[in-house]
Length: 274
Image (cartoon, rainbow, N blue to C red; front, side):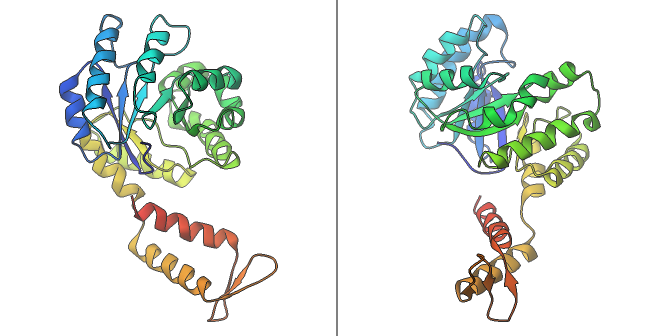
């Protein structure tokens, strides 16, 4: 199952105790990591633990981040994920080549795929990656690797890449991208400021590495009650209004709203449901 919420919690695949806590958390989706959070000598343990944990969590929204192609663990990860229910999503790291990514998704039986873009080449290919296969449900940045590739140390240096990703996702018809992790789990004020900046750029949701970060992320992306009321009023009025040839709607009170306004109103109400 692939969630459409705003909070996504990473957990190491080789820590079944932490996986159980993550599955019981308020996260909209749990991200079981077989890649960066797992030491090389724990990869097999992580795969086995992941399979058992997923089997015991029927109905929970879960994605599994596998190791990238070219590593010694890639094929075993693919084989393990293929044994899972087809609604369990997969996160593909270090995506650069749309054709190769499409082949990997096909190997994974076209289950929902989230693509992680972690290099300058990946950023430049973002739109093609976003539409490389019908099973792609979203794209996101792996900002630690991207910072190293670009040679930047601050969030300002990632502004172009972040905006490029938002634009590529929209152009490909995908939901807005989810923000990368904020690594200082004790700095909740910094997390809030950073997440507000991402929201203003067009991101929708954020990955976390500790449950204490979830409430802050959820709060930032929670629609303002006044905005919800206005959206409900617009859609209700539009339903009773007269449609014009150009797609605009004449509301009973004499106002006109176009398709863009209606789309924004529906998006707000959809977000409220999660």
